[in-house]
Length: 219
Image (cartoon, rainbow, N blue to C red):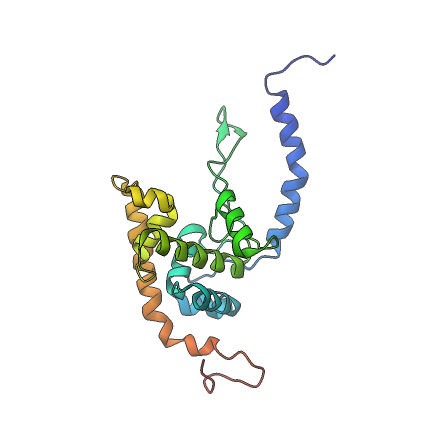
């Protein structure tokens, strides 16, 4: 009979996690690299033109402006597809649990992502896919508008509801939370900057057909 050790179960779980971590790392290898110039939405879309298509489709479906969607993602993940919150450490050195289940471009939590999949996203929707992430943000903000009355053109308060949940927003849970309020202000600033930049380059990304060549095509 093996002697009892207080961390035996922990070590066993860590051993079991190694193959899974390897598989996840392999998926991340094929993900797009984060844009180098994240302060400029034109440069973001020039590096990843498919992201424009994803954000435009979400805007048309749900109403959240492209600039707001991308500002959310810049804040939440810095455009990293497989990012999670950092792990905590047991005894200061043993990798332990994460503070939340947030994952992917939009840092969607497991429960609300499950709701999105059940509602409109489907079982194959992935938080590490930009098309699904932008659609999720649009879906969530449309629900925020219905539940709180916040305008889809108000990125600051949309983000407060995104961070605190619609119920928390209605209760004013963000009040007295300077970190949350500062983050929402930064998202609003980023969205405003992206909104002012996009008209100067949007036509570049509206050439969808093989016979269309910018600058001679328009959306």
